[in-house]
Length: 121
Image 1: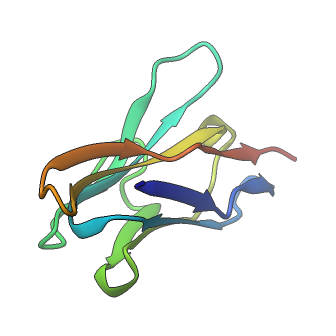
Image 2: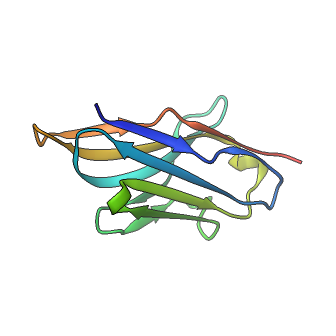
């Protein structure tokens, strides 16, 4: 069974930094696109950053220049380095990945369970 497990969330003061990690495991042949989404209370889930299998990246305008997405294909892991955090970055952050599974070689879009990021003084 494919699983995505996030870690690294927490409470940080405005201007601070956090690094989120998301490790995929279980029945993986390869992983195509990976991404981070977030959902604040009362708001829709939104894309924060995405990275293709070839490491092309895409960011929401609100985080450009502050957040960096990266991946380690050997570890099936995606990271989100978040700097200069603002109170409006407060949300539950979710990892997402398009996974080619074994033994079927079918594509499965998977979500992690989410990790809370709170930016507050």
